[in-house]
Image (cartoon, rainbow, N blue to C red; front, side, top):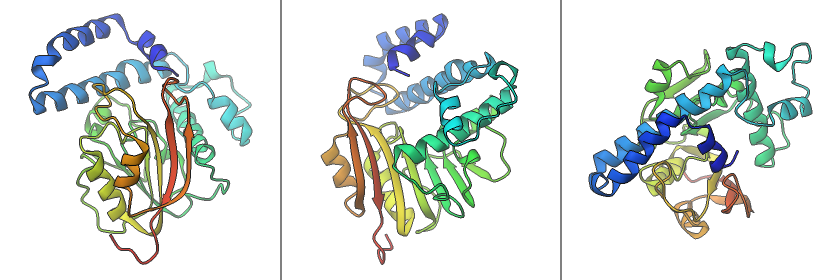
Length: 269
């Protein structure tokens, strides 16, 4: 889904609020606390008023949920989309996102996540962790409390949300076999510090899965313009397993990096 398509989905009142913020922001953005508030509020409004609204209309957020699930033999043939309730739609969306991640990062092993300790940085309420087979599932999501209050989280008995920023994660060194940052590294306050945390949290031989837009103009949601060279600098402690740059990624008018990185064996931090 393109940014233009997302904008068209935004309700009229919210568009008006965003326009007012745009007029005031040159002055208000002098305050770092306001910038943080603006970013959190804009993101929460997107998830509640745009993303979640699709499911209440008996629709998926991603356009290819059915195709992905059919490809892996997981589509429920016995029911039509219009007959699926909200909870089932959300779970199927999360499962399809998990399968998309496997394809996106070129992971052919369907059991790649099985038995692993996985940390997802900035996942939103999309349900990827809830639908995967990892043993330990931890979501680092500053808006987790707000998501819970608004009923946006997919019910799960084994996914833990930490309502904290990713710059300082209260977990021990080597706590994760896999860390995911999918469309989130340019959202955080300090990308370099987040990358340092990724390197610290990965166990030797652990994998970092990164998907991020490159060289885009900063926005309220995504305040950082990241280049490939900058990312290589931030991840200098990791080995490049595979990198793919899509000339027109999710935004369609800018490149998108899909990278797989590994922490060398014997390196503890």
